[in-house]
Length: 214
Image 1: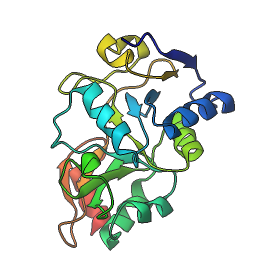
Image 2: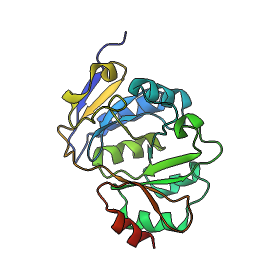
Image 3: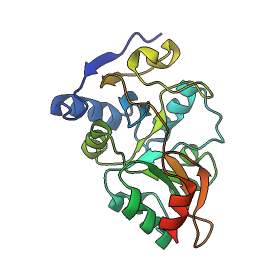
Image 4: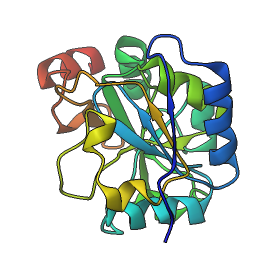
């Protein structure tokens, strides 16, 4: 059984280059880590490594039909993940990224069905937390952005909230201290035509999404 992973404390606003580099190398090698996002700690793995993504599902005990969103460091990375970027998605990205909104696109045929839960759709967000942003930039590719908890359990606002069943299967934890918590991102499907479809109302209201996407 795997022991406790390494824990590196990072300054939320100015994360150490060495800490980010170490975390990125682990992800590139197929490993899994915990890292801070705007509201909660997340689980990071290479989104293009099907085995690593499968491990994330196993760690979380997440049903296979539930897709996992990914984080990118720039909208240009979308071309590696999605078939097209509809105009409505362009409007939402300009208005709300980074952070706050997760946008659902049609996934490319070569994106692993493990990542999409077999839905052929993929949720993508440009992260708003400096540590998450630096990490995705260092990896130079999409990483998983799912919360660091067992499926169906509350998310974790601090490292001490992480359950042992999750922690012992990670290679590294980036500890940025207590996070703000609060309301998560609003999830918006842009595959339904010219108007956005809000799948989950979060920090951005349905009204604001509809106004921005019209």
